[in-house]
Image 1 (cartoon, rainbow, N blue to C red):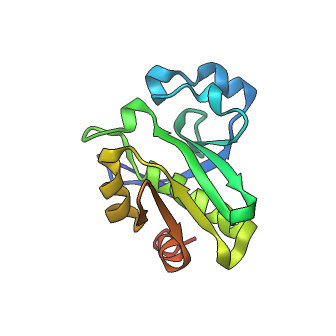
Image 2 (image 1 turned 45 degrees about the vertical axis):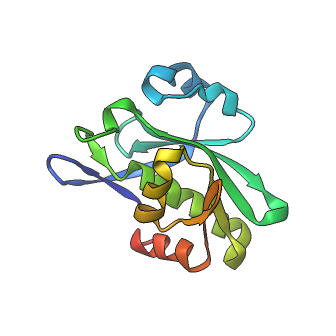
Image 3 (image 1 turned 90 degrees about the horizontal axis):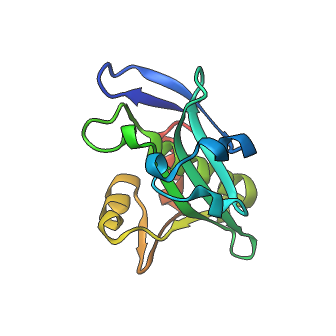
Length: 155
């Protein structure tokens, strides 16, 4: 089971990552989640929440490029209260990226690849924190880099 860490108590909490429902779109606001998530309805959109709560802590939109054995992360966001130095929970972003990797492996086995086009200021962060590979405009995980991230998260 994937977990996130409460920033103050350091307690690990079990999480669920599941598809966003039509009801969820009614409560997913641009103010709290930084994007208009309704524009992503044509993709695979998932929410991350605690096992014992319905509150959405993070969101990810995935697009499948079957001919390339690749899943692209189109959008990724954590809720407003889980960003920055005063965030409540740590590990939301990493768990969402790991989920994308796990889905890519499920679909494409050893050929799996996960990519994203980061905001310029986040590119170095994705490379350093998650082991992503620089491909110019995009960063990606495949092969050893992808499996290292899965192993680090005990997946």
